[in-house]
Structures are given as structure tokens and as C-alpha cells.
Amino acid sequence: MSVFLDAAWGKSTPHAPVWLMRQAGRYLPEYRHLKERYGFWEMVRTPELAVEVTLQPVRRFPLDAAILFSDIMTPLPPMGVDIEFAPGPVLARPVRTGSDVDALRVPAAGELVPFVAEAVRLLRAASPVPVIGFAGAPLTLATYLVQGGGSKDHAEFRAWLRQDPVSADALLDKLTEVTIRYLRDQIDAGAQAVQLFDSWAGVHDAAGYGRFGLPHARRVLEALGDRVPRIYLAVGASHLYGPIASLPAEVVSVDWRRPLHECRAELPGMALQGNLDPGLLLTTPELAVAGAHEVLRAGLGGPHIFNLGHGVLPGTNPDTVARLVDAVHEFPRTEGDQGS
Image 1 (tube, rainbow, N blue to C red):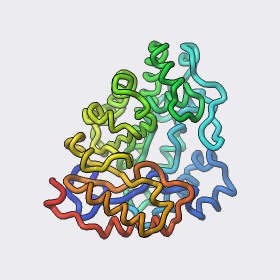
Image 2: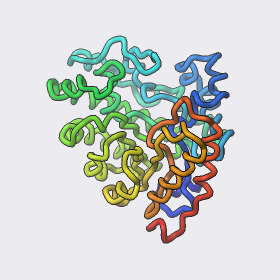
Image 3: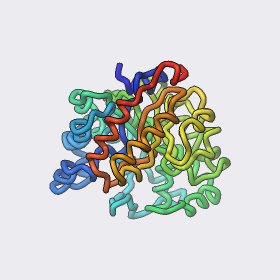
Image 4: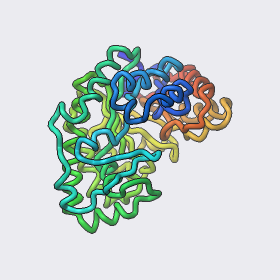
């Protein structure tokens, strides 16, 4: 067992394990060097390149887990969706009608994105730390499919859900099945934990999330069983922690907007992951470490996996990340502090 897997299963650990969302990417010079030769999709779709990018931060920092280099949009092209990155995902033709939904394919298990499963197999053999697989939650994937690109609040998508609930249900059902198959493929290939990214759940009110988000997230997580720890992330969603607490997940990843000790009371029995503000990594190492200590103190009282409240920002200094990781490992957690 590893300290990361112990914490994810709800066990006491001597220190908080640490990994960072988007720990592989543009802030690392070795990634930028590789990016000069290969496009984003080429790196995602070439297992050897995906493994190399995944391992770059693990070689540089003493991280406790490696998350596969990929994108939540990866299973959508096999469904018949044309996606480009500019730099965020942009769809040539958004999904807006019942016929659009009907046209989407649901590839068979094992045929969805075989290059991802191969990357996980290679990574499991090469990584010195546990491998995390991931997928986008059905509600978040539907957000991009209907909206067609970036948005501050995805108001058009929220309106579409209420105006055409029949098409919405059909779309979410298809995305749920694809997500289940996609994550099962990753687990079968060797992923030792999985994270379900519900990045846009927080733009919905409790009624909208309860109608269109929660049931599909539950179906995905239930279908995976407890073969590996299941991590659920919903950004800007502290108003939804009541229903989120009912999900069959071992870990809930918390963004930076609320301290962990407040969130723990609303998410009983779950390990917490998070929740340093990524913006602090754009300051000085001293300020980042001070912020980490605040998070670590707030995370006492139960199992805690240290992470950011969202992904590493491109302008982050790798030296600051190095200081941060060391500071997390040096912060002691006693048995009495953890409540388990």
C-alpha cells in the first residue's frame, strides 16, 4: 500500500499524501520542449508520449500519485464529436436537438479509446507511485457538447436542460454509459484510483443538479464498485455538498473556496482532497508554503489528500511546487489529529 492509497481508503497516514491536478503540463520546461514537437491530441493518443508526460512531474517532485495525462474530452470523438482545442475545447457542431443526440454512438467496451488503456498499462509498469485514471462526469461532458465551447456560467446549457429534458436525459444516459465503460477500461488496465471530474456542477442550483447531475454521477460511481478508490470533484459546489455526500465515493475533492474543516462536517465518512488556491503558486514559495500549512491544519480530523482546489496554472514556478511538496511531507499528522 502507499500513503496515497491508504488515505484514499480512509486510513490514518503519518503525513498527507500529495499530488496536484494538472501536475503535468505547461509550467514544466520538459513538457514545453515535448510540446514543440507534438500536438496535444498526438500526445494524448500516443501511449508512449502520454506516459512520458505523466511521469515528468513524478521524476521532478516526490509526488505520491501520478494522474494519467489525457483530457476529459478524450472519449467524445469516438462518439462522433469533432473537437478542437483553441486552447480550450471547441465543437464544430454542438449537440442541441434530439436528432443530434440520436446520432451519437456508444462504442463497445474495449473499443472506446484503446490508446488510453494501453497508456495506463505502460504507466502502471513504469510508475513508482500509484496511477490515477479519470473521466469527465456526464453533466460536465454534456455542458461542453451543448454549449459548444467555453462560457462563464453555461447559461445556454442550463436553459437547454429545462427546455428539452427528454433530449437531455437521452444525452446524459449515453454519456453515463460511455463514462462507465471508459473508467472500467482504465481500471482493468491497472489504474489504482479514478477521479470523476464534474467541473461545471457548481453552476447549477440544487434542483438542477439533483435532476440532471447527481443521478448520473451516482450511476457511474456505483457501476465501478469498490475495486479502487473513487474520487469525485465538483468545482464551486459547496452548496451541493448535501447531495454529494450521498454519492458512493471514497474521496471528495474540494476547491479552495471553503476550508476543509467546514467541508468535513458536511461530507461525513469521506476522505477529503484539496484544497490550496492554485493562485498561491503564482506568488512566492514562502506564501505558498504558508497557505499549504493552513490547508493542512484545516484538513486534520480525518483522512486528507493534499491537492489544489483546481489545476496547476501555466505560470507556476516549478521551484515553488518543489517547496510545496516538501512542506506537505514535512507536516506531521498524529493519530489523534485524524479522527480515524
